[in-house]
Figure 1 (tube, one colour):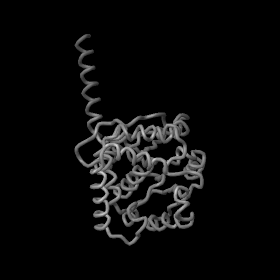
Figure 2 (cartoon, one colour; figure 1 turned 60 degrees about the vertical axis):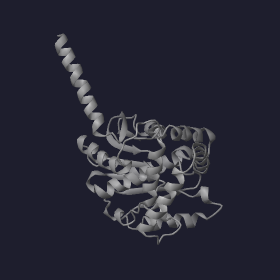
Figure 3 (cartoon, helix red, strand yellow; figure 1 turned 60 degrees about the horizontal axis):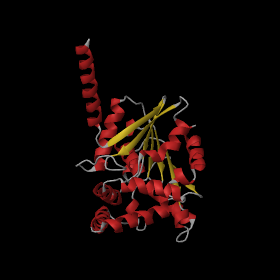
Figure 4 (cartoon, rainbow, N blue to C red; figure 1 turned 135 degrees about the vertical axis):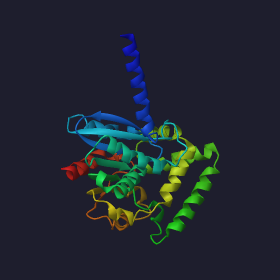
Length: 287
């Protein structure tokens, strides 16, 4: 009996370790039962940004939430290989392993980029795509005609600047940025805590890759119905809503049937600033 117990424990440990090793680029927390929803947070964020979303959709037997926290973010161990390609590859493998039939993918910011990339490169694996404030070419917002090579050069300049900052300057810039992205102080504090617990090199390298990316042509391969939730109020002192909306519609022009909606009362973290508006749009889209 003891031998069988030890063997069972060894098998559990072995298979548990193998399961984790299959996707070292992210941790997954699973809640509920039903049709799968994959939720991907943004740069330096914990999967906990989706807690209220999980509570709304995945406690009633209709959906099962699979919430990712990416390696190097919010206390998760960093990996040595470039993060974003690893997440895409391992998430595709995770969906296959779980035998999910066209799950819903919801991504915020960097997570929205990863959702786009997955849906473009593996169109058969994504059923519906919801992008919360992300763009196919973030580095091209001010200069739409910028080339891919120029985007790379611009991103490398940003990387070198961020790598050269001392720790205090880096933290101060994080706080300054978050104040433009989130309205309530308690939500800023939550995001800041995740950022402080993130691996600095992983954050900088992932931001560099995001700023160098241009998926404006690639998104034409996406087959999933797609909802984009954008924001503009943080930029109201610089540009009107119509101008910001035009950036979104232009960047998503090659995605067939995309629906773009703009929040009037939320900054970048829409799930914090105006969850009721976000849920209303998601409900309409899913139904």
